[in-house]
Image 1: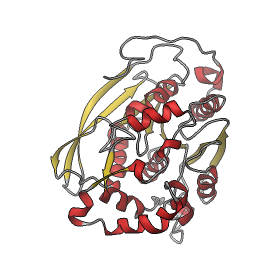
Image 2 (image 1 turned 45 degrees about the vertical axis):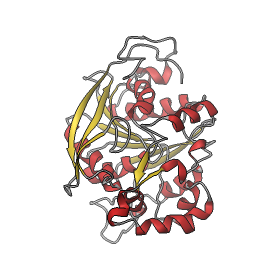
Image 3 (image 1 turned 90 degrees about the vertical axis):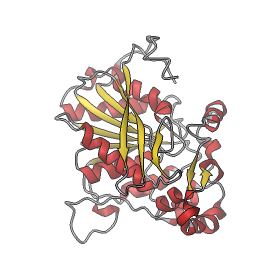
Image 4 (image 1 turned 180 degrees about the vertical axis):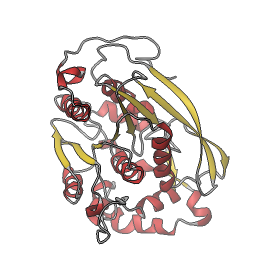
Length: 334
C-alpha cells in the first residue's frame, strides 16, 4: 500500500469484554487511529482471517480524511485474549455483540461511519442497524449466508456448500469447541491478487493461519441480517433494512467473493444505497486505481455528512508523498 503522506497517531488499549451468556471473558485489543478531536468517528471492522493489524494501513489513510478510526480485534483473532471461560466457546453472535457494545461504548455527539472489510461488511451493517447510531455503512462485501448461492461462492470447493456446511449443524456440545482453520473451508489464498500479500495473510498466526471453533461456524451459518426496528412490520428480510445509508465499494477483480453476490443483497435494501466497483482491486483492496477510488468515495461521504467541500479532505484531492516514520505511525505494534 502507498506510504502515508504524514505521521498518524495510533494508540491502543485493552478492553475487558464479557459475552452476555456468561461463557467467557476477553481482553480485546482496541486501537484508535488519527486525531482525537477529528470531526467524524469511524469504526473499521475486519473479517474472518483478519485483525486490527491488517486493517491498520487502511485506518491510517482513512484517518487523514478527517476521521478518528477505531479498530478492534474480534474474539479469536489478533491480540484478543480469553481470560475466563472454556476455550473454544466463542460464537458468531459474540462478534456481533462486541461491535454493538463498542459502538455504544464510543458513542458521543460526533457522526459515526461504520466501515466493514470482507465479512466485516455484514457485521458493520448489523451493528449499525441494531444500535441506530451510525450515519453511514461502507462495506467491501455484503454476504447474506442464508442464500445458497452465497454459501457456494465463499467456500473453497462448491461441494462443501451442499455437503460439508450442513454437517456444521451438528457442532453442538463438546464438538462445538473443536478448532477448525478457516483456510480449510475457504479459498483464502485468493484474499489478494498479490501472491506475496496472500502468503503473508496465510502465515499470520493471529489472522489467516488461525482457527475458530466449530460452534462459531455453525452460528455464523445460522445468522440472519439484523432488521431495522423502524421498518414496516410486514417486512421480514433485508427489505426491512431502511437505515442508515449503505455504500458498497466492492473490488471488481475479487477472486474470492464475486461482486454480484454483494450487489444482489444491496439491491434488496429499502434504504438509500450506492454501489461502486473498485477498479483493479482484489478482495484485499490495495491496488491502484481502486485504492484511490476507495479513499475518494469515503471522502465524499464524510463531506456529505459534514456539509463541507471534498477538498477539505486530504485523500480526495491531495498529493501523496513519503510519510512519517515514528514508532507509533509506521512500525505498528510488535
